[in-house]
Image (cartoon, rainbow, N blue to C red):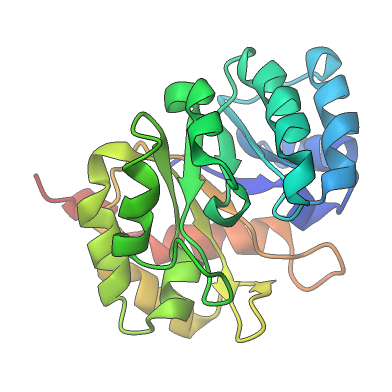
Length: 237
């Protein structure tokens, strides 16, 4: 069965312990620990050795999406401690101010494609520029970002074909015109299905649909994710 889970930040912003408890209550076994805001990183990193994560089959951590260039080494040092526990680290390419420094993570670094606000990482060509420097890094495919950049899903297809061998995690949600991660609509489901067959069935799927203010609920978004990817058994060789 497709491994589908949630980002803690989408469920309970800034309260990863509550999110972990909610996901375990729903028997969800795939989780991404969110430190999207810089101030969330240190508390999360400090807590990880003592968190009860044994009920999950896949755990990753999302690095802060914004921080000053002067903090890059501090962020890397904190994330390397987490990486030593075997957790994959998801990072946005626009905060990799000095890409060569991020080679220290090896294949535990997952670089995510970006929404249209960002200056890099939006297309396969732009992602290739990053992977040319951080060669061992793997790929976190954000299907919502790719649809926002190119609603025809052509760019999504190009990303999946260019970095299929590197694909290690998928983010799913509807990304609106303001680049906010909304619950998945029927239109988004139809668009996502057009490239679902190119995502290997064993790849962990993380919902980033914001439900922290009652926009939706865990069960509904997990079902929407399944519906979005229901043609995965047709994956090409």
